[in-house]
Image 1 (tube, rainbow over the protein chains, first blue to last red):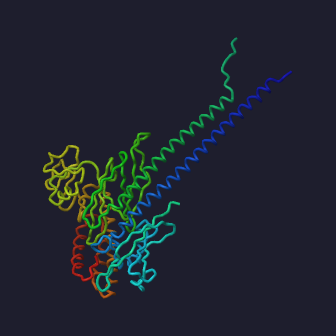
Image 2: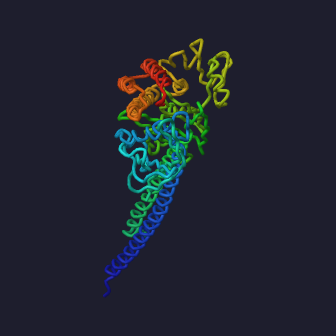
Image 3: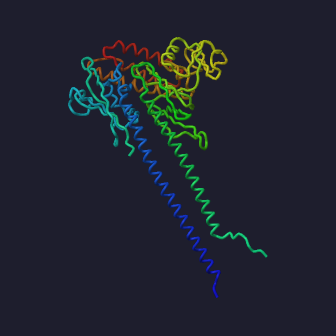
Length: 166
Length: 304
């Protein structure tokens, strides 16, 4: 005599197992779709962050010579080198501008190479106000002015960096 | 006897339970994604707004105007903190949505230490008007960025303000000779005679108790008291730091044979600024700055 109860129980078990497998497969499928979506979204977000930072850096470097801490009186595209050298020594300004790199470089007349200090100024080429790791720099040409037996202005550049989103 | 009936087996029960869990998870994930998407958009708009505010600064001009349009009605949240050496400016935004709640809390705050935005704590509109003026005390300190939206009616503002509003074609500001000629829904700003229907009263020294000097009059008109006082404190902190830099520059130039003897005055000026509490102290600061300006103008190597 056949045991019908036992057969019925086995058939049900198989059905439950099938259903469980299907549900697990659906869950895995959704998880993969979600992961794919999140990867694409975070990639585009990183790109957006990079674009916004780059645009801001381009605008900032164009405007930097008019910042009160750097500017030469009555000239929006001139940097006061005397003031900038003093600013370099100020600890209060270390995190004032939220940029990882800010440097003033003399380019003409061709100066002696080296970072400016009170000892070698003005026979030097760069004043670095901020320098951190991991940045992309943008540059703008400016006039660099100082008192040296009268007002003396030379050609220079401002380098301003923005943090890479990587 | 009819023994037919619906057999509610374990398989059915299991399927319904798991199905409910799957649907719940799907709905939860979707709403979370929409929420985080809106947070991301709001933060991105705040970052873009911050980025737009960078190039609007003044160079050689006295004032400047920029119109900013948003894709939809937007709330700009302006928070200010005067804690620290320079204090900080925190901007966040929230865009109105047609899905779910109309307004969500704002996205991430964008912080900056070198900007001074004067506005209401929460500004709402599809357009915002940015008016920039330089703040000099006596040297160039920063740009006063005033953001406003909506309609204002200036009643007899005086020649200087009227000329500035006309020259820059500031939108949303109508100049009127009397209170009756103002649009009823506009914010009425009275300058000479004060009526009880005036929303803001501008005297020679203050706007409803907010004291102003040097281009701060618009900031006082368009800002909330809390934002105004905080931003003024921040401006004065930067003025104080700049005074110390100019004092050191004076000593530095003296070493190069270009003596100015202004280091002592600038040092005292910086100390005075360190005691600044609120806009009521601006008058004292202004008179001290005028003295330093006079002395600087007489120098052969001007400091600023």
